[in-house]
Image (cartoon, helix red, strand yellow):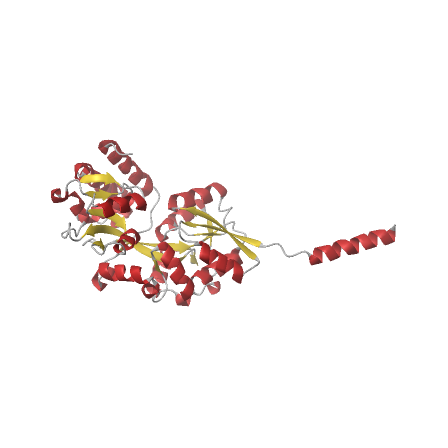
Length: 358
C-alpha cells in the first residue's frame, strides 16, 4: 500500500512537472484601436507565457468599471491624463508606477513631465504618456476657407453646413472662443458655471446653423466626404484620415488653440499582472511598434520623434495642419476637479433639451 502511494505520488509529481506553465493573462482596458491585432499577436509571440485580453472602453467607462471593483478586473488601463488625479483621490483605483521598469528615456520629455505633473499624488506617479492628439476644427478649404475659430461653426455664411458633437470638448472650445479660460475657472466653480451658462446660450442659438450633431467618426466622415457639411468640430485623427482621401479636407487648429489630450498608461490598484503590464508598455514604445500603433490610432506617440513615426499619409496631414506656432498654442486638458463633469453634463442636457437632440 505504501509502495502504491509512493508510486502514485511520483506519477503525480511527474505529470505536474511535464504540464506546461499556465499562461499569465494581461487584461487591458483601453480605447478602440489601441490594441491592434497585429501588435497583440506580435507581443504574444515575444512573450508566449502571456495572453492579452482586450476590453475597449472610454474615459467614463474606464472610471466606472474600476470604481465598481475598487480597481480590480484589469491589469493596465489607458485613461486620459486629465482623468486620473481627482479620480484617484476620490476612488483610489490605481497604484503608483515603478518608473524604473518603464523606458521613460524614449518618451518626449515635455509630454512625460506634463503627465507626471498631472498625476503625481504624495510624491508617487500614477501614469505615463502613450499617445496624444487634439480636438479642433475640420474644414473643406475650397468651400470654407475662412474657418479659423470654434465660433465660425455658427457663422451664418455656413448655415446648415456645419456640425459638432455635444460633448464637453465643444463646451471648452467655445468657452475659449468667447474669451474665457475654462481651465483656470476650475478653481472657482461658481465662475465656471457662469461660463457654462454663457456657452450654453451660444450653442443653443447656433442650432439652426448645424446640419446635424455627429456622434461618431463614421457619421462625421460621411457628412464631410459627401459635402453635406463643409466644417465641423472634430478629432484630428478623423480629419487626417479624410485628408488622405481628399486633400481639400484639412484639420484646422482653432486660433485660440487646439485642445490637446494625452492618453496614458496606468495600473489598476488590484491588477494582478504588473510585470506583464510593464512589458506591454515598453513593447508598444519600440519604434517599429509605434508605427503600427499610430497607423491604427491615427494619433502621435508620446516618444521622441513620434511625428516621424506616423504613416506617410498621416504625417502629411499633420504637416498640412500644424505649424510650430500651432503646437506651442496647444491647450492641454486640465485635471478635472470633483463636480465639474456633473456641471458639464447638466449643461449638455440643457442644450440637448433646447435643441431637440438626443
